[in-house]
Image (cartoon, rainbow, N blue to C red; front, side, top):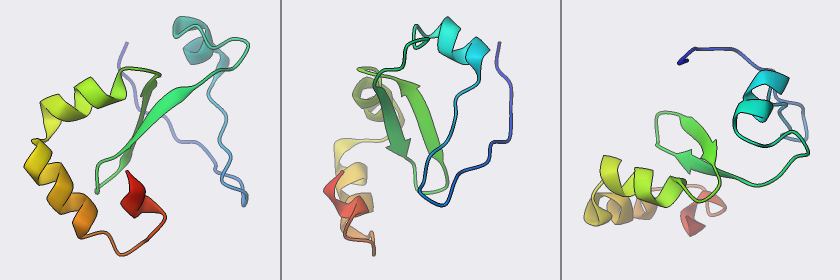
Length: 78
């Protein structure tokens, strides 16, 4: 099921998730998702799964160091 697709982000920051992915993840009528800023990219996952995934990928100390190094105050609240 893994694939790589390219999407266009609007000037207001919006992006559409393709219908097959929305159906697969139970988002046909919309709904929340978790977004992980990994520093080198952004990962969108079903709501409620992001924290556990982040914990598996990055230690709490490494995550705090990453957030402390952010130069964008809007991102530094993660």
